[in-house]
Image 1 (cartoon, rainbow, N blue to C red):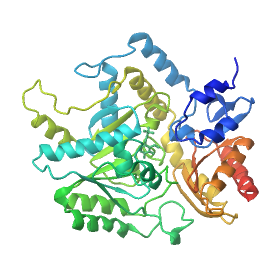
Image 2: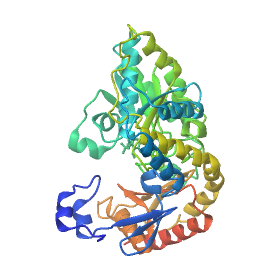
Image 3: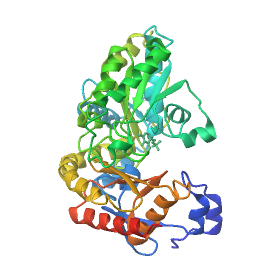
Image 4: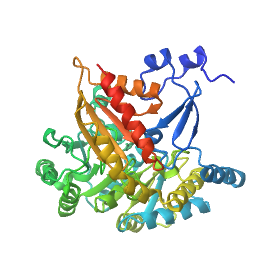
Length: 440
Ligand SMILES: Cc1ncc(COP(=O)(O)O)c(C=O)c1O
């Protein structure tokens, strides 16, 4: 069977978040995957330096997950999630509730990170309405925050390019991101800057807390090029939200399930939010799934305000919420992370990765390197006013050398598989050094 798409196929497929014209002139076709590597149509092995799209930390084609999926398909391929249940959804919810920090012991299933962010913010707004404070509708995000591609995500998210095409669809405002030029090349969290969270007080002064439903932030951002919060910043956000009766939502679509060297970013930074959004790593990327982990008090408020027992307390959900195959994949993923101790492994290997990635400091065009756990971002100098050309060229050169890394805006991003060995880190960093030196 051919591994090359037909011209009709190339014409028909409008690829997401892709430069379609560039790709279709020179298709990069992935034909297989195993562990930390892809295979391409030229028979090459390519190291997966972003774990898919921050999804496949346990490595590709894990038989533990695929056999759980096959078994599930043989038993129950689909069950309606509205008004009916199947046991794996409850088993997984119990498991996630036990893993979540604090009293985030209620689980709402979705199918993606975008849906998780929409769901958490919808719950926040509905919660305040249920609680007799219907004016608390405004959402506060951060500049450079990425919360998905839906109308909600592009509104409380802070990605300028999204605004260019779609504008702003929801009642949302933003505080700045935390990055400052003087902290360039910091390893891990910058020591200074916790007070940047106080900008939230300005938004509260402007809008009044009586109009604000929730603050939504990523513990550290991935898509914007891995921006790490200063020590104490997230704690300060938590304090301000608590003082002013505003819900705090952590979007852990990237940081959840090991990326930060802890189960959640909330654990890594020792802060308990009111809700956590997750997706991606929850099934090791094998099947779409997401979830929102919700604090007990919020769930109980909905149940108490629910009226007659046959009433639906939250008219929200998706056809595929808690899909049995996704639940089976998630349970197998959590088993695998635990059995192979992959999350502690990330914590253990992170200092090695940190030293390696920061060894690129000093090369031409590199303006900053940031890292946490098994995530890193590099800012690359713009060329002739074009922020994206150098990261694109470097990433393509790396693809030719057998390494996949992500490029976005003026950044390169790394999210290593949790199973990465130190010699693989060395090879990746050597190749990156060469590709960066080759960039004009
Ligand atoms: C923090 C965060 N939230 C939400 C999303 C959106 O996830 P999805 O593409 O699954 O909708 C992403 C995707 O990268 C993300 O990084």
